[in-house]
Length: 179
Image (cartoon, rainbow, N blue to C red; front, side, top):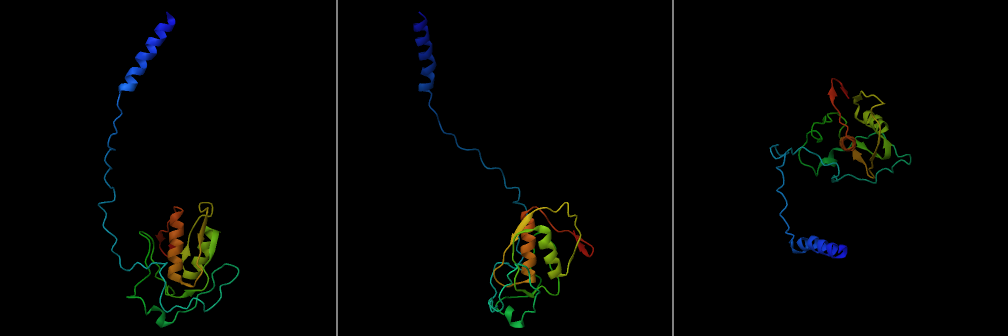
């Protein structure tokens, strides 16, 4: 009798599963974009750090083997001939602009693969002549800024801002200093 009850029970349990059709439902609608009310960034002064400049000779000087930035040299007046307009180099949103008089100077070698953030910050402070305030215990991590060709000090600044932004850091102006 137990076998019969077990067979009947298993048949009753299996029957609804076999007859129940599975219907695919449409996925729920996407939530609204929280950034749709922000204005578009139509800032034409943004200078793409990865865009090649016309008239710049990348092979003028060989990069140093130590992988560190060399002192900037003044660029000639004709190296800007392929670019329209002047103005300061572009910045990331809410980042301080580089208004240094040497923003167009050329850095022959700005190569920092897998470097401590503070080491790159010291190099960029020397290049841009900017003053930084920081707590070394709070600034931990490594970034990579690699440039195989000479770049301007302004482009090195933009690359540094991008790299620290990727690590969750930002620079905030505080008087004559950046913190």
